[in-house]
Length: 74
Image 1: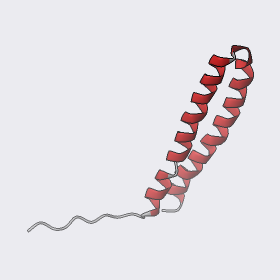
Image 2 (image 1 turned 180 degrees about the horizontal axis):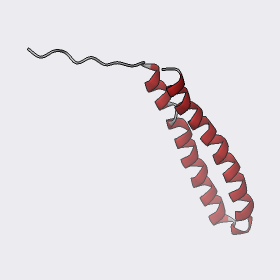
Image 3 (image 1 turned 180 degrees about the vertical axis):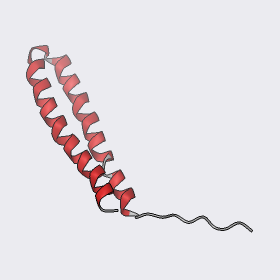
Image 4 (image 1 turned 90 degrees about the horizontal axis):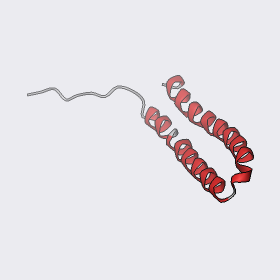
């Protein structure tokens, strides 16, 4: 008979990993809407791009917090 395999770790690690999925979806929506707005009004592309980069930076902070929390609290 084989020994049953054991799993070591904390279930919270899975939760922290899943916490990075939300910002990824947010980035996809934001970039898609920015591209759509640029296609509709090309003259405001510069301002849209600047606002998109600021928003992307804030969203990425959320993703990094979720990822780092998984390493810190295990």
